[in-house]
Length: 284
Length: 301
Image (cartoon, rainbow over all chains, first blue to last red):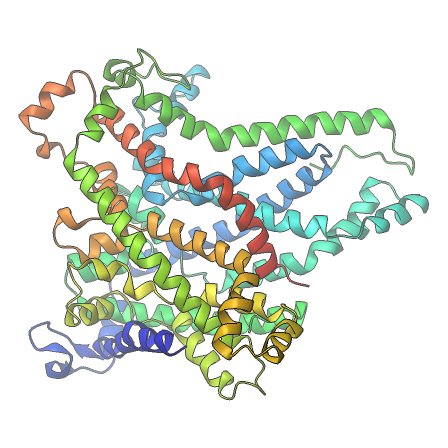
């Protein structure tokens, strides 16, 4: 217990004091104690930056689309897989779709850069067969966000499928038998037994994902983007990274982190409350 | 998707059969989409540079050759990064497991038995939701003298709160009688902790261990951020530079000699595959435990 507290203080609590930087005109040579306070100037400057609105829009768009697809695809897939009676088939499908979840975005960025390449990528070769001109998926402003959303769904829906499948298999089979005796068809069984049976877990997963709405996926976008698609692909995290590390605007970048922390904090508290109210699920 | 259902009360068998056939084909197709990109990369890595650059490679190697692998495996920087990652795992995994275990155990007790549990709960929840942000963290770790130090990859992540919660829930569901019986038999708190609770919690600890291994194996950003010199990069950071930030200026004349046999396309494919191999190897164990561990930790009740 004690070591954990020590580590948390050293590596989580101490850095939190650095947030003071957001209210200072911070220069590394003067340090936190030497820099002068400027109140909310950094926040004002931040909101008057040219591209901040676009960045906010990108973040929300990518993140919300990911949440929607990240819910629908695994649920549909789990429902379809649940119909299959062949254990071997179910297990193999599960194993295969779950695999990408364990690969890092560095690895997968390498894979996608390769197969989405306009000159000799697999996808564009396939498109050529249908007579479609090559598309530069990762270098085209209008394609980039969609590629991000689709590849993310590709990577993570296996995980969701396993969670929902577990919920589906825990539904009492005698309910189905009773329904069949009463003459319910497949559609009615689906509506009155299957869907209510997984409502709890669906609500829980939705609510939990809302807390991270400002996280549109730094790992993924950082590894896949390039200056050409900054306009539509830049999200808060990548924006902060470039402001902070590349342009050395420490104070503004910390101000963005602070805003992000506060928004996520509020959303998470609200969504946990909601989750508890709707599903009686408690984490601690 | 669900439209191929009988409309009347009695399901007609041919409709059911048609649905199942479509379903099986559809599911197989999706699985193919999940695995094909990886198979394609594998095929690329075994193909000659000419076949790769002319785009002839599908899911089977063309002009099969091992040149790319020879090149990657002779690359000192690649091996160096590999060793950094192994060191990182050797330090981080046992330490993390130990700390998670001794933290989750008291947290699993009720508030009556463990005064101050409420306080510690908030103490642990806050860092999970709130952080200083990139720059303050960097500054703090620099003050600790951790920049360019292997420990910076290990220490900040030593208390994964999510894992603590998972293990806490697991220990809480163990029958309390086991511990009572042990204490009646004369076992002290430490004996009962390591001789009774630890063996019982093995499935949960295995899950956390695998989380921890995959997490450390896959992490690349901390390496890039905290290591000033590429020679200290762990494998994924090295790959990040090699794969997504590939720079033609770094090619040496010796590389040009080998270029005729291999291309950066095939080299990258080989590197991707070598770095994925360990995950593929532990994956069968992963899947079994993750499924169990996750379901037990998250889909309770």
